Structure formats: C-alpha cells, structure tokens
Image (cartoon, rainbow, N blue to C red; front, side, top):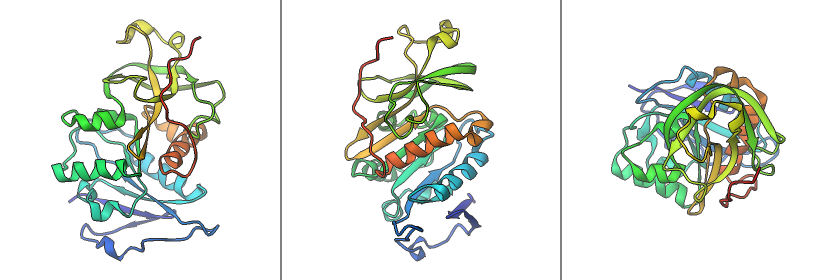
Length: 270
C-alpha cells in the first residue's frame, strides 16, 4: 500500500489510502484573502531512487507555507490520484520521479489534458528520467535524460533575468550538483532559463557537438505552462535559498500566479 501524505499549510497529516477526497473543501482563503493554490507533488521512483526525496517533500511544503499566495501541497506516491475528478482540484502537478510510472492510458490522457487546458506542470531533476516509453511525456517536459557526465561545482549562466525562477540569480550562479545532458531537446521548443557555462567543466565529457546544455527551461503546452529544472540532486540544494527561490518562482509561474515569457529564443552570443 503506497503512502499518501496530505500536507496542509505546513501541517503534516498521514491518512489512510481510502480517504475520500470529495470531503476536502474546494477553496480556502489565505491570510491575505487570496485563494490558496493547490500543488500535487508526485514523489515516486520506479527506477533509481534519490536520497533527497524526503527532504524535497519537506522543502516544497515549506515553500507553499511561505509563498504569497500560499499553496497547499499534497505529496503522494499514489498515481491512482491522477484522474480527472481529483486533478480538477489542483492548479499544478510536480514530478520528482524516475522510470515508468503505473498510469493507464486514460490517466495519461487526463494528465495531458489537465495541463493543455490551462494548468501547470513542474519537473525537477530526474523527472526527465521518466516515461521513456511514453513519447508524449517527453514532448511535454521538453527532453529526456541522456547522461550526467559532471558532478561538481559549475557555473550556471542566467539566460533569462526576468523570469520568476531566475531573476534573483544575477548573471551567473555557482553551485555544485549532478549535471544532466538531454536527448530529444531543442531550443526551438523551450525557453532556456539557465545553461551550463562550458568553461566551468571538462566539456569533452559531454555528448553535444554544440556544447549547449540547458539546466532549466520553460514552455507553453496548449493553454498550460511547463517549468523544468535539472537541478536538485544534491541534498544541500533543498536547503539553499537560491535554489528554493528558483523552484518557487517556477512553481508560481507554472500555476499562472506570476508572469513570465516562455517563447523560445536562440542561443545568446557570448
């Protein structure tokens, strides 16, 4: 039996698998009279499981508590929740996942429709290491994991200094993390927010002739918004204010709370 952690405005309550979601209120008001947003955080690993999954869950709960407007986070390993009657209660879905998640074809269609019709999707780190057998997911998120040749301190170039996920970072962000490369990825399909400074690593270990490695991006999907950050492998990042603000900005943008352009742009000249 999978765990369901219902995390309500900073409080954590464990409830039984059979909880009737219909008993939850459809709206709640925040301290400022604003409607509380709702985030479903799917934290399930069907492949490699990161040690940071529990820390990530706690961090996202805290982000929701301190956010303005606040958002309520449901952390779950239960993909049975990904059905229309439950999804309609949420403003965005977050994946920190790996492997082929147990979802029926009907659930997959409901998931795509949820985002296409105006809701948000946030992918963190290994979310691109998910659903290789479902090409529509790869199209949604913008690419698939293709390796992690660098695990070290790097410099991330801030390509979009206006987006809520990156406007606090200045021109360059130095950090240590596991750095992904991607396949089925193109700047023509996404707006790059952060990219790897190729001079900060041994670039010969990479797998792209153009040495173009994005670390975070966003895109439109129908009427919905998709935000992805490749960062989040290292435990310390989930307690690092720069990373948490990066993630919070992406969540609120995906929910439609904050403005930001997701129109693809060419690689800047350096």
